[in-house]
Image (cartoon, rainbow, N blue to C red; front, side, top):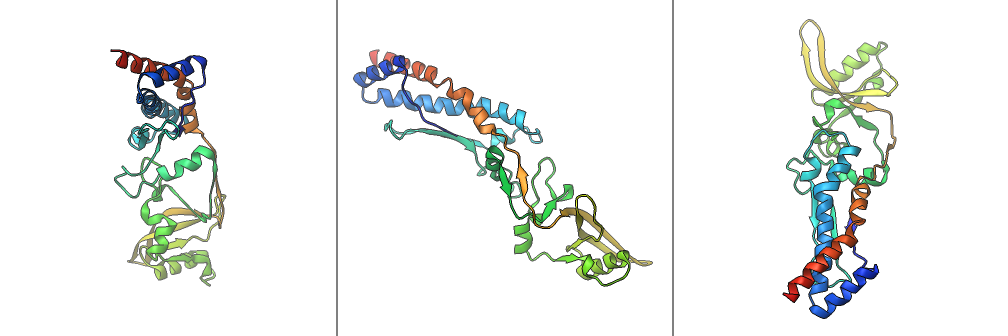
Amino acid sequence: MTFVLRVDSDENIAFANKLEKIHRSALPSAIRNTLNQAAITVKKETLLESAKSNFKERQPNFFKANSKVDFAKGFNVNSMESVVGMFSNKLKSEDNYAVKNLEQQEEGGTVGGKAFIPQKAARISGWRVTKKKYRIADMTKNKTKVFDSEDNKSDKKSQQWIKTAIHAGVGSIVLGNHRGKKGRVGYEITGISNVNGFKIKQKAVFSVQGKREINIKPTHFMKEAALPVAGKMDKMFYENAKFQIEKYLR
C-alpha cells in the first residue's frame, strides 16, 4: 500500500505556504514525516488488526514479522511516497512462501493449473503452505515419479494398486483408483514390505481432480488496514507542520 499526501484543505495549504517561507527543508520534512507516520501506523497497528479479522491466526507473529515499510526519503515533494506491505525476505525457511499468495488474497483471482491439490500431510503444520517437496514445480525439478494405478491391467482394483505401488517404489506418488467427491487421491509410497505378502505404507498427499483453477475470495485486508490511517493524514500533516514551524521559530 502506497501513501501519497495531497495538501488540499485550506488549513493545510496555509501551513504549506508558511513552511515554504520559513525554510526550504521545512515543507519536505513535514510531508516526509507524515507519510512515514502513516505507513508505520499501518504496520504496527491497523495491519495486525485487519489480518486478525481476515485470517485464521495460525502463526500470531506472521504479519508482524513479514511486513515492511519503505520510508519516504529526500526532499522532492512531487515524488515522495512511503510504502507498507508484506514481503518474504525475512522468511527463514524456503518452505514457507505464504507471503507470495497474499497479493491474490488481497485482490482475488486464481491460482491456475493445479491438478494436484495438497492435503494436510503435504502442508507445513500451522499454515496452509505446501511443503517444498510436494510443490509441483519442485516435483518436476526433482523428477519425482508419478504413477496412475488405473493404468495397470489387473482385473481387481486391489491388485492394480499393489502392483503399481511396488513398481513405483518408495518416494514415488501413486494415484489411487477410487473416486470420491473430491476426486482421486495421490499417495506417497513411504514403505514396502514383503512379509507374508506385500504390504504398502502410504500417506495421502494430494487430491486429484484434473486441471482446474482454485478461486481465491478477496479479503482486501491491506485496503482495510490503510483506509482508517489515510483518513487521519490531514491531522498528521497538521501536527508535523506545527512541529516544523516551532522548530525553526525557536
